[in-house]
Length: 574
Image (cartoon, rainbow, N blue to C red):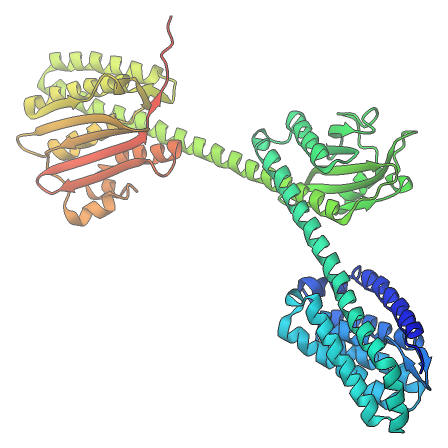
């Protein structure tokens, strides 16, 4: 009886070679896409079929001669290929491995050829059933065991003479079934282990990128200048543990920390060719040897650089570069991180530019609205004085003085924000002017505490509300009416109410008026101009959550409520 131990040792040697092949296989991009199931294309399947078919073909030539046939690992290739890439890969690998086996001949040739293709199909079905992510080593070994049994069965059925095939399998059946099943499991184990390690590295890289983004995001509210750039490169140097990190604009170095800082200094022109290439191509450039770094300074320690351009709205702003020394290379995950951080910096700077433009437009619109208030108020008040000149010249002279004092206070107030007590005094002066015309038909009541008078509001917030109530609520009413001002605070918000018991607004018009889009001006001879102005200024100053709210009932009066943040500052003392 022939001993099986030499055969077992020879097959074990072949299994070890398969393990090495499995590790090398994991470096192929097509295999990585298959493992992650990302963009796994027909082209990738054909590549994998060729790779695993090559394993199968090599398994033929590594075979061990036994009784006129071969004990080999040929079947491992299509089984592993089918488990990793599916039926197309498994069957393709089986066919490729079967071709050299056909030309080797022998009484087990047809059984080996057919079994090789069937093994690829069976393992491909296992892939369809489980998918690689759910495929474990146990399932791989079971699949390999089944495929080996199929091979043994076909050898016994198709090989002639049967007696010789039977004697062959008595010698090689147990060692090859066990060894090749284990080889398939070993292959899948190595591939899965490398895949899991790759996932860990990716997760660590993602966490590292998130940390760097979190730390740098809050630094760029001032833009990317020498001060903020230095903070950013220090963070990146600490997180990446690189030899040096730098940020440049299109002409010079803005910030540099790490090895080579003696000649790559802030404000110096860009020295390395890699940065110039990145800026010319607007693409990330990676070099891993000193010759390609091409720094003109003698003794520069930099041996590897990745340079990623910082692009804002399609325009080159500068670049972010990470450097290494001692012939260390830039790894793929480091390249992805630096590229991602450069893109992130570009987005932050683009967002800041957009915000600056928005702020400029907001400020311009606010100043335009504020400029509309003074003439609006002035023309209406001069109309009051004009009417009084005909009725009572003496009272008109008093009103002119009152008006001049009022306008002086308003026009000399250069601040955007005023104390609420000053706004109240402004309103009282305006009401006195109106009462000079309408007499006791206009009555004013005020309800607030001294505390709220210390709050600040945008200039000309209250007066337009009062003017609207008098002109379009109370003056059309024959016997006039009551004007009430209420002011209070709740939490961080301040509320100002102006209510009148005048003619009110009918329900059909109220919906348009409540939009504060100057519809009130159309419906009530200009009544909404001041309200729309105040509403828009509050929104521009404090945000869209703040502004005016109006309720009204025809014949019973109107209530307008302004909500704004409670803004308090300590008064300066002389």
